[in-house]
Amino acid sequence: MRCLILSLTRAQGLQWQTVLEGQREGWLCEVETDARAAYALLCGGGLEVCVLCDSPEGRALAACLWERPPVAPPWLAAEFPCPGADAVLRRDDAAALPALVEQEESAGHVPRLALCHLPELNCLARGLLRQLGMRKDLGAWRFLPDMAALAAAHPPLLNDLKDRLYPLAARRNGLRPGAVERSLRLAVESTWMRGSLPGLERFFGHSVDPERGKPTNREFLYRLQERLTLAARRIQ
Image (cartoon, rainbow, N blue to C red; front, side):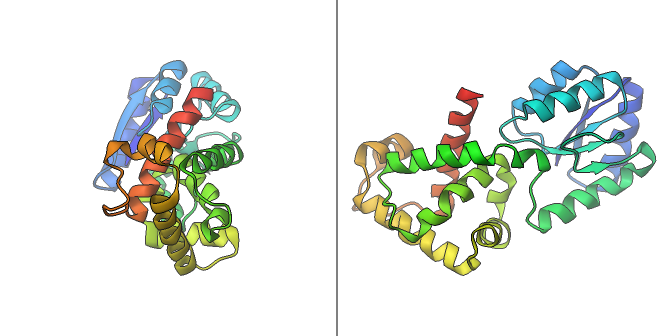
């Protein structure tokens, strides 16, 4: 879990870093003291958690993230109440943050800031699926744009389709996880065989051949998420 800590001083940030990296194996933290530099790092992607210490820079970044969150925003913990925060924790409570993030992830939730992007990502996803030639009468058309938007807004969901992404998409669309998986598989098969060849080649390269094996659900979703993220960043 990669974490960015924005603090007033480097020494203050290192206190958070020591606690967080000591709580869970695999937590890697970096400390920043400038809001603009921190925002650029978050927009670059790959950071899953952000901690804002109570400082002018922390409050400036909180306002910036709320007004213009990155395409895939992190879980946000702050030492002060702010819009978009998933947790408000003082430094004395830092040890609780890894467990809180794990609970939210295991429950299939996404960062609050990620919810801001879902409407526009959903619209972009519909456009991409039309480019692929996916038929609107397929059952997956009901939930796939929303599923792709969720994956773009919170890429870790793709790490566990069965226990996280399928159930989340099912809950949001009044379906069962098994139905989501089956409908998606049928939609991928149909689009691979009868979709737009130019669109499929743009997505999957010149390896597209109806006689060869279709992509798996995971491969299809990963490629859709990549294209959706690129499209969203171009218009951000």
